[in-house]
Image (cartoon, rainbow, N blue to C red):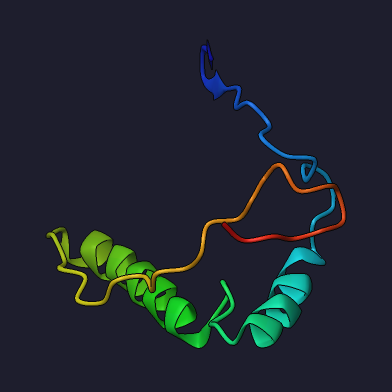
Length: 88
């Protein structure tokens, strides 16, 4: 809901505080499931391109085309019990 200059988002899972371990858990699950983890090198490269494009666009005052696309990653099952990560 709109609160003026702030937006209040509905929490859809139990993960809303210190979630620094989620990346590690996802990496472990990805190895077990023989899939890419959500924080893959491919995603990192895409994020870097977006950040660089923002900088170049601001510096040169023109639009910059982003060539890469984020990799497809599995959706997380947000109804999983707290402490577990499950994919759909």
